[in-house]
Length: 84
Image (cartoon, rainbow, N blue to C red; front, top):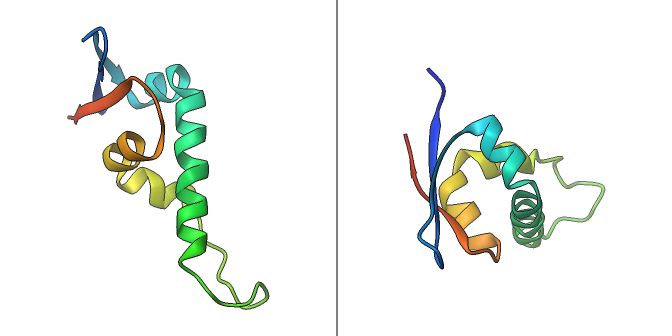
């Protein structure tokens, strides 16, 4: 069974129920903004010199807590209400 994501629009109260691939396709720009902001935020936490820094997979960390990261790290009228 595919994971369902319920997305709500703050202004119009439009409600969408999407699978994860549909969500990624419809909100491509918002996801990119949120992921870029997440990467900047996480890389600021590491004060090691560049040659010692571990190579992090920020995308997998981002999707681990998708609801919070999407809702707080992008500026859009859409927000994830629930992930089923």
